[in-house]
Amino acid sequence: METKVIRIEDTDHIKDEELREAAQILRAGGLVAFPTETVYGLGANALDEEAAKKIYAAKGRPSDNPLIAHISCMKELEPLVTEIPEAGRRLAEAYWPGPLTMVFPKSEKVPYGTTGGLDTVAVRMPSDPVANRLIALAGVPVAAPSANTSGRPSPTMAEHVYQDMNGRIEMIIDGGPVGIGLESTIVDVSGEVPTLLRPGAVTMEMLEETVGHVEIDPALQGPLRADVRPKAPGMKYRHYAPKAVLTLVEGETEAVIAEMNRLVKEHLDAGERVGVICTEETRGRYPEGVLRCIGERSHEETIAHNLFAVLREFDDLQVDCIFSESFSKDHLGQAIMNRLTKAAGYHIIKV
Ligand code: TXA
Ligand code: MG
Image (cartoon, rainbow, N blue to C red; front, side, top):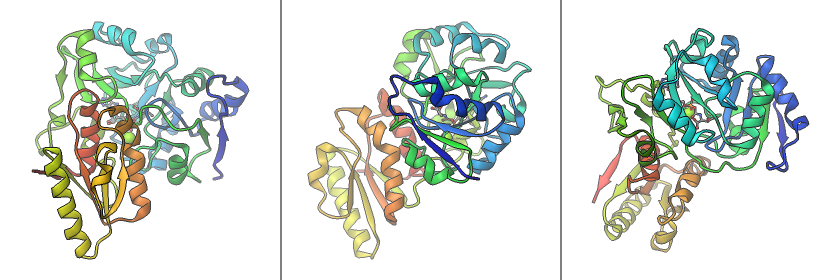
């Protein structure tokens, strides 16, 4: 299959003509990758089971891992769910459109092929103008996982999507680099107490400010034990995995720098190609190894934004191992550390 790439020149002034062919492909059961404010998504008609199957095939994704249905406005939510619990209503008012996904009891309209057999459906209303307009023009809810091959870091630029999906899907819409760089926060509002299933740019503090106490899914606390089943099925897979072995080093800055340099030397001496992930604040401190700066410690948004791109870059550089500094787990740091520790397979050295 030939994958057509179209570029949106001015995302602040999108013309409907630019998105009409993409909307038509979606309505006809095809696949279109598009930018959102979090990561690039791989879209298909969420109400069409056959279209959902194509997503799983293109990504090489296990079919028990449910998809998020994307909508463009509040009236598109009602047909997908049997009820909108109070917490869901309040969170929608506060954070939609935006980087928040909510899990609701699903209506009969939503096929099990989209929800991976679950009786709930995850729904998100993206704020990205390309995503939002595309969904509105398609006239159907758009199921969209991150547009990466299953197991690879999520795409934050159209080039990443092209690397993984060229020849497998009908179209890629290039809207430039995304804003946030980490996938949406997922909150289950279908039960008594809202529960965080995946941390993202809508932080715990922001959620609790709006709805009071929010539980955290036990599966988020650390390496998965066999008896803990994550409520978001996707969280059980080793996501965001770089090809090299990634190790996080945690502790006081000076001790971390010393330990990282020691490890780098040890692995270089063993004949390996070694990558180092540092921050603006520490970039002058690592004399050896292939160095990549992930952003500013004092500005977490830059770290979130660059994380997946840096992991992909190390894949291209074919390093054998990567050592990375680690970050505070407060605010956006919870999402950053969730992705990083998973990418590292929970391999963390404390100094
Ligand atoms: O930011 C995002 O959410 C991006 C963009 C494209 O919108 N999408 C995304 O989708 O990250 P994906 O498929 O890569 O991750 C969806 C996660 C998976 O962990 C899945 O298990 C979980 O959402 N999920 C989907 N439906 C669910 C449901 N009904 N109950 C619990 N978890 C669900
Ligand atoms: Mg994903």
